[in-house]
Length: 143
Image (cartoon, rainbow, N blue to C red; front, side):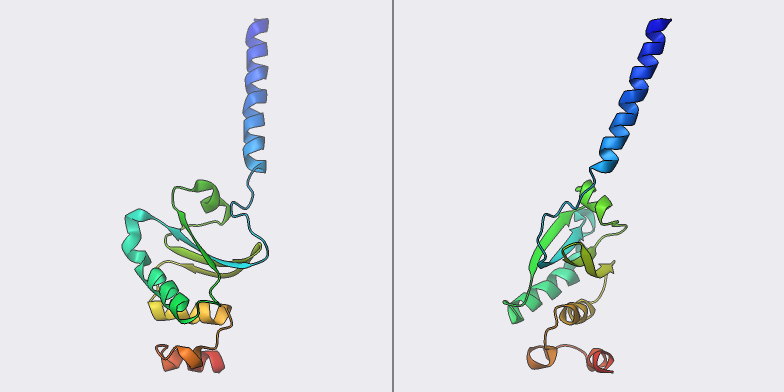
């Protein structure tokens, strides 16, 4: 009987210890400084929904190579990052400066809307180089 009680106590301690260590080990999985980065959370089973994000980021990089921050893709299998950033759907794009979230776009969006948001966040002068933005977005930004 004593061995049964000892086994129960030991099992309880191990169970509580494993729960505690897992909860306390959730840290930012992206080791970064205070530089601004763009992170796209991707799921290969819905890659067709991410096309507009890739197109927008490539277009921005082509037009503004020196103003585009670092870009990372995190796969849906990376559970620690998914949990840390509270990702509920794919694709999700975040623009981060340190631990500060500057932009979150969840789900599918047209390329022009993604570009408009990124241009605003990165403080890029869109009237000088990007004639492809619809006039409505320019009006909304200025008005």
